[in-house]
Image 1 (cartoon, one colour):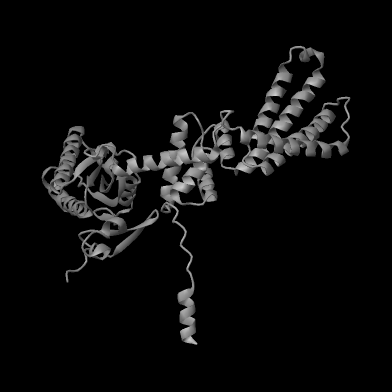
Image 2: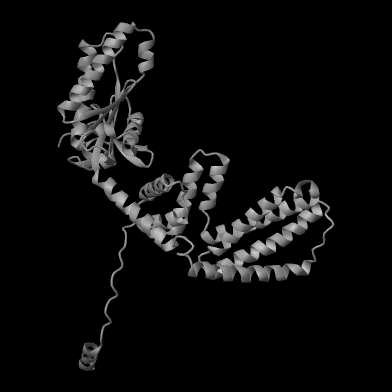
Length: 415
């Protein structure tokens, strides 16, 4: 009955919930990319490369799967120009840890077998100096070290089997290729593999038990140290992070305007144009961030300020053309606006921001804008009264975002 069911439920003990584990909020693709860049710089500052501990730390800090971080690192390596050796090393570090152990074992086995075969082929001419023999010992030592520091005994056993079995097989191949009077019975390959696996298993156990005595870092502790550094650095960067709206202004066809004009008239007119943009920017609470050629980039604390300044610049350029333009060809402008978070090393100086995706996007908006208009991204328009609908009806696609075009000819009708 319902009463019996209710009594049974009351007597049922609900197990206590497990204590919540600290979790990091998953980041966007750009956030993961930024965190990888931070990890890469931290490793570079200590003379190291982006290794598995750093990749694991980035995955924990961003909440992204480890395989996703490895893929992001690989794509990052592909985009960056590097010398062949640096590219090969970077690609190697994007492999899974177990695969890296197996690759090193195979390379070490092949290298040692080749050196020993070459020494046997050259005979006493080089063996008395012992150079090739020393190189072979170095290769064997590196291979043994690679097996012994594996994360678990199973991986160490496989890496050891590859090292010994690979050496046996490679030595037979090189002996045949160099016509050495040596014979390697195929059935011996199995004992070599078994001995290598057993040696790898034992070595890994011994190194794990004596890791601290040997001065080797614990991978878990190393990853935790990297994670702590990443989180602390991210917090420091976030303390200087703020939302800024950038306005990009440029002259349409400025090169043709200057070609057949008097240099003094060009100098005067373009100086007047820059002073005009600077005055309007300051009037609406902004400040000029940078100038490049005929282009001006201004920064504002709010999109409404930037949009009002852009509209005033587009309507006020008529007065500049009428009274201050000595070239004889009217100045036509394009404007682009974008809003986003930037990190300001100096909180009081917006010019300290030199490389920002927000600035680049504002420039892209400006280039996609028709002459005489203002292209404002959705990230900026959403902060305006009425949103994008209050700006205009024309829409353009710019990179991965959309912009709305404002111009005196396409203003939305008044209600």
